[in-house]
Structures are given as structure tokens and as C-alpha cells.
Length: 361
Ligand code: PHB
Image 1 (tube, rainbow, N blue to C red):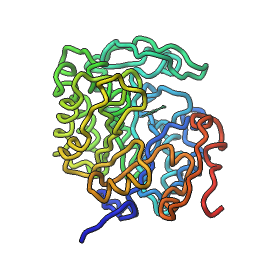
Image 2: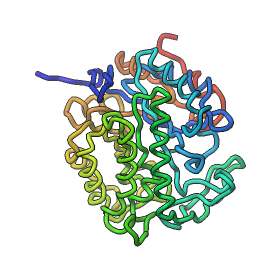
Image 3: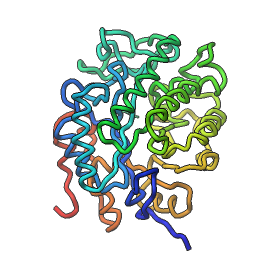
């Protein structure tokens, strides 16, 4: 019998992962000034290298892609140099690491943008709430609706960032198409009311994503390109009127691209309005015949069951990885987990970042 569990290896393109446990991408706001990855970031990822795969926090593909303080970029030489130290440290420990390529779109603020420009989006629709700026929370503004030439420039930025990522030694890239950031803003019709070829039916709203994937896979083996989706996540004022139809279409389009994996946040980071919580993730996964990575609320047992039953090939863990650098070893030993300290999730220093104890200590 071909039995597999959380601790079984998995071939991901050219990478042999030693287990099915993935560190999910998580914004921690601890890059150095200039959005440059620094020494404490190197230590943080190195500590977590026993994960089958690490997916980094979102890294902006351009200065325009930034929406928060102290998030790392992958658009200049100093940033590439910072990331090189991180990939080398993870590889030295036998781990694998993908970088998440990020453009926040409207989830930004002029004070975070080059020349204090308006943040950009498919449509001039303002999200609710506040942006996190270097001067604290500031109300979101109505974004600038992208013109076609500007969309094409952003596609080029994704391609350039992918070249940089390969240069920096990453095993692959994850295209962040989830959680209400730019690509997701195009996908879902709550944030996209365009009347051109980028708006309207799912084919049009998926156009930007598919252009990004074409540009990225023209410079990087598709087996090293993953994608993250979040069909229902209402975080960042997101909604779609028919998510099953939209994301079924998206996944059908992904199939022939033979990507490394499809990573799905199966739920919502913000409460969902009544009636909106229904989505058949199993059906979505079944439409996709490649490697499926499940995320959101899994623990050791439910993750192991998902792998054993074939519902998922990989499971990613977010918050448990903040507090447990040796999550794999703890799961193996069925040992208790360290409790995460919420207050130090976003920003700050080594406290709550690289000082969580290992089992052995
Ligand atoms: C966040 O900063 O809260 C955040 C960033 C990226 C995500 C989700 C949440 O994909």
C-alpha cells in the first residue's frame, strides 16, 4: 500500500521536500529601512528550515507594490543581497524556500507610495478602514484605476521580480493572488467594475493573473511557480458575487500551466456575512490535478488526515510557525506547542520573532 502522511517526502518540481509541512507566508514587518531583508530575518527563516517548504512573507515586486511599513522588497540589488543570505542559510540546513511575490494594489496609502502617488487598483473603489503607515493608521483613499499601459508595466515588474528571485537563490516563487491584494482585486467583482477586457466575466477578471503567470513562467520553469488563492476571504473589503464559478474558471486555466502547486486559504481572515460562508474547496481541489496545498486552521491531526486521505498534498501553517521554529519536530514528537504572542506579530525586533524556544532548549 502506498501510505503517506505529514512526514512523507514530496517531489515539488526539482525540489525534494523532506515532509509535507509548509511554513505559510506571513507579514512580520521587520525588514530594515529601505525594505531590505536583514540579519534577524535570516535567523528567523534559518530557524524554520526543517519545514518541508518555507514560503516567505510577501515581498513587493516594485516600490508601488508596498502597503505596509518594513515589508521586504525584491526590486533592487540590496534586497537581492539580503535575500541571498536567507536562501543560503535555509539551503545549508537542507530546507527549501519560495518567495511570495506581492503587489498590494489599493491596500496602501500615498505616504507609502513613490512620490506620494495614489495606490493603484483595477477600479477606483476604496476599501473600508485604515492603511498601516509609518505614521500609524490612516484612512484608505480611493485608488487610481489602472490604465492598460500601467497594467502591462506591472506584469513586467512581476517578471523582473522573478528574475531577481532566481538570482537570490530561491527554489521558486509564489504568486500572491489572495487576500485582497492587487491580483485578487482584479479577480473578484467587489473590487473590479471595469468595462474593458479586464472586467466583467471571469475570463476577463482572470486576464491580469494569467498575464502575470505567462510572464513569470517565461523566465522561470513553471514547476517552480506556485500560486495562492483565497476564494472567500473577506479581509481587505473583498467579496465576489459567485466565487465558485470564478475560482473554478481560474483553476481550469491553471491546470495546463503545470505549476508547482495551488495554495488555497480555505476560509476567511475576517468574519463572513451570513450565507457567504459556503464554498466547496474539495471540488476546487479536484478540478486541479496538480499539487494542492491546503491552508487555514489546520492542526497536526487534521493536516495528517488531509494528507492521508489525499484531500491535500501539502498543508501550510501560519501562526503555529510564528511560535514554533521546530514545528516539524514538535509534530513528530506530538509535543506541546509554544503559544504565540499576538502583540509581537507585526513589527518590532527579535522579541517574539527569533526568541521562541526549541524543544531541545
Ligand atoms: C497582513 O499584513 O495582515 C497580511 C498580509 C498579507 C496577507 C494577509 C495578511 O496575505
